[in-house]
Image (cartoon, rainbow, N blue to C red; front, side):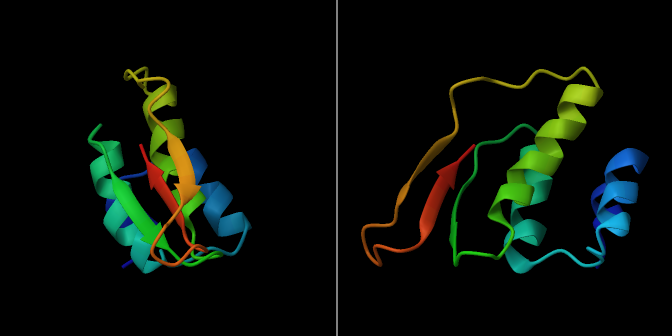
Length: 90
């Protein structure tokens, strides 16, 4: 699987390619499609696994396409069960 399988727009794919990101991480594979569809997502993953790109890429695409993006729905916090993983909800 690669980033183009998500239907990301060319400028995002080009930026990923130029940054040598060729394959999505597991959190990106699971997170990008529902965020592109405008759905809420809650996920946890270890630091450095690509959580930020999991919501940033779809949000950038929605903004460029003129599709609505709800504000004030992104929440960050510590995962209480491990105290070191970040939890996000978009």
